[in-house]
Image (cartoon, rainbow, N blue to C red; front, side, top):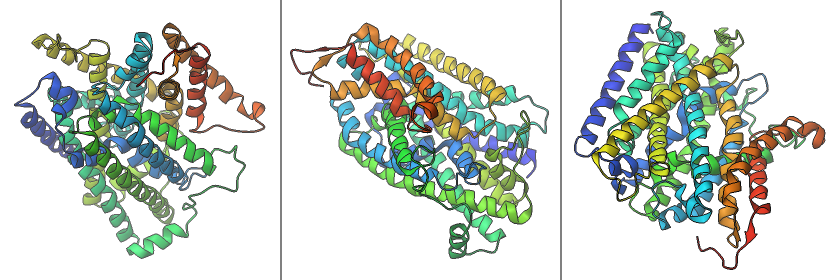
Length: 501
C-alpha cells in the first residue's frame, strides 16, 4: 500500500467526520450540548461508541504485539480484561447511581460536596494530568505508525505529523463537543470492530486456515496461555494480581474519569446508563478475545514467512507495537491494509477526541464554573474554545517528549503511569464513600495526594527487598490508593453526624 493511497484514505475519513460534526453542531453548539449532549443520548449509541473510546489504538496495536513479547506475555492480558469487567460492574452499581442522584456535570463535584474545595480542585487536577498523559500516549502510537508508513515518505517531521493529527481532531470537536462525539465514536467503533474480524479473516485466508483451523492453530501455539497460577504470586503475571489490577485500574480510569463517565451521564436516566454499561462490558470482553487472537495469528504468520519484529527508529530496539502495521501494510493485499488503517485511525481518534472533550469540560466546569447559571453568556463559548486549543497544545508537547524517551510497549506504559496518577483519585473516592462519619482536613488533601505517588514509587522500587521478592504490576494502583486513603483518614476527625452522600 503506497503512502499516497494511505494519505487519500485519511483525507476521506476525516472529511466524513467533518461532515458529521457540521451536521450535528449546526443547530446547537452551546455549552450544554458540548458538556452533556443535552442529556438526551441513546444508551445503545453510547454503549457502542464507548468501545472505541475504551479500546483505543493501544489495544488495536499494542495488545496483539504483546502476545509474542520476549517477556512471555501470551494471553496474560485477558486476566486483566476479566478484572476490567469486574470493575465495570462496580462502576455500574456503585458510582453511576451516585452521579445521577447528585445530577453532576463533572463527577469531581462530588468531592467538593463531600470533602471541600481543596479536595475538589485536587481531584479535578489529578484527572487533567492523568488524562492528558494517557491520551498523549494513545495518540502517540497511531502517529508513529502514520509517520513510519506515510509521512517519512514525504520527509515530513514527526512533530508536524502530531500537529496535523491534533488539528484534525480539534476541527471536528471544538463546536459540538460531546453531542458530536456520541455520533462520531459510533462510526469509529464500527470501523474498529469490523477491522478486527476482517483482519482475522485475511490472515486465515493467507495461511489457508478455516475458522476452526485458526482456533486450533492458536490453541496449540506458544502464545495461547491465559491463566497464570503456577508462578509465585509475586510474579507480574499471576492471576490474582492481574484480576485485582484490572478491577481497580478500571474503577479509577473509567469510573473516576470524566471522559467515559461524561458519556454515561449524557443518557436520559440511571436505568439507561446502567443498561449501557452492562452492554458495553459484554462487548468489551468479547472484542478483547479477538484482539489477542489477532496477536497470536500475527506471530504465527510472521514466523512462517520470516517476518522480523520491526525496530524502533529512535532506539534501534525491537518494537512489538509495530508488528501489526508492518504485516498489514507491507505483507497483505490492498484491502486488508485499508481495513487495518481504518481500524487504527478509528480506535485512536475515537479515544483522543473524547478525551479532549472531557478535558475541556472538566476545566471549564471545575475551574471556571461554566455549569453555574450565571455563566451562560457567549463569552463562555469563546473561553471554552481557548481551553480546547490549550489542551490540544499540551497533548502535543507530551507526545514530543514521550517520543524521545520511550522504547517499550505503550499499553504497559499507560497502565504503569496510571498506577501513579490515578491512584490518589481511588483513595479520595474510597474515603468519601466508605468513611461517611469522618470529616477531612481539606487543606491537607492536596499534600497527601502529592506524597502518595512518591511513597508508592519508593515501595515499588524496593518491593523485592521489602516483600520477599514480590514485584508489583497493575495492582500498584491499589497501593497508591491505600496510601492516599490512610493519609486522609489519619488527618481526619470523627463527625457528630453521618454524611448522607
